Length: 82
Image (tube, rainbow, N blue to C red; front, side, top):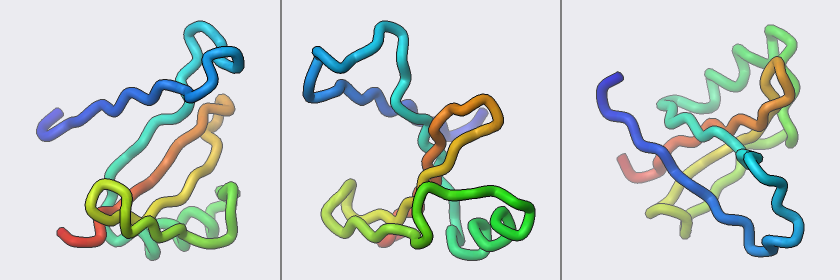
């Protein structure tokens, strides 16, 4: 699939963990704003109204979350300094 990375997240509170549960799938994108606008036009609903800026995360990222067709949580993220 080319240059692919898998990020594994461990919940801080294991008491709330559900066996086999994956918190979310993250997909690196470029030009996140026009992508989000196109998906909103197609009826995709995002968890928030705005793309979040996280300058201290992974050297700086912008991200937004939404639910996929089967309820899976998906994150689009774009590096700020690339």
